[in-house]
Length: 430
Image 1 (tube, helix red, strand yellow):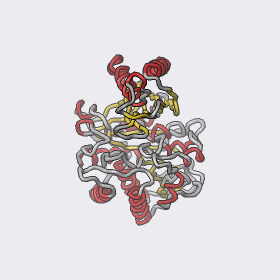
Image 2 (image 1 turned 60 degrees about the horizontal axis):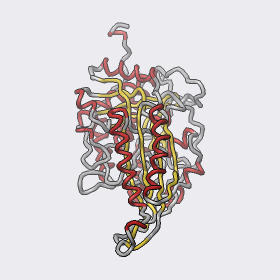
Image 3 (image 1 turned 45 degrees about the vertical axis):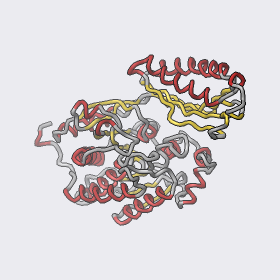
């Protein structure tokens, strides 16, 4: 195809960047922290306020808003009645004292880009082959309620609605009750046949910045094992109780944290591990801990390696329990398999970047994203913009405006291309 024969697709307009800046600034202000970050946990008052603001923004711009039973917010723009939908979005919830770009950039950029695309496509109505939709997924982060990716998992059928609504936070409040309290436990979503899903996100790693590359196109994900492990000992006084007879669950947890890190050290770059959360009871400074629960993660691109580590580490936990005179149980286990994103969409994204002089590279993602959930239901694409110093889930998370705008340029190019030339239907896509 010659350059002259390439169809002229809609592009981002100067006013679109201003619209994005305003919406993103609003997002950054709701739940803002003193350190410049964001604290907006799922179904909190701050989350409710942001949802209200987002729904108001959508309605003002002609979107039809629908909230489903797990609280996912869909903004719908009908261009061709009866046609499938091109869905774009991410999440508005954050980590505790997290960053203001993670998730929120994808929702706000997606909404502004789709609104502009719809306006431009209405001037060329015969070309639009798909309808357009933006989505805010509920509880992507999994900070207040576990597991993560809840809303998208329910949408795709990977998790039962009843199980998701029954998830409890540390205070015993269910996700269903929390959503009801902020007015976002909605109604069943009408049939929404999807042609494709596109998500744009900050990288949350240093690779784009290190490679001096402007954008990343994700081709596959790492696999992950997520465990909740509980040690149970005996509550006692930290003063008079004899050291030799103590059954200290916190001591067992400490040994486990070290053992988890040692697994990563053995494997080099092939394995990432963490214990990101520790809950103890009674959590008093002069009481021997009777119970300690650890949230453990193992991540790798090598599923065989993960399986072997899982089997070996189960034995490690038993040995730690024996050495500390405690009991251990695996209270929750989740395996997230390695998953490839749609190769044809990735190639189209890379081609659109090349046509616009944007440097882009294929890459893997170690983190979980809603695009992974959607990839089991329809062709899905995940785009990355650089993260300064690779910092994320932190108040200092930052991406420069030029990088955000450039990401929106590619997002618009890909969405416009898909709207005019939809991807081939995938087997089993509803």
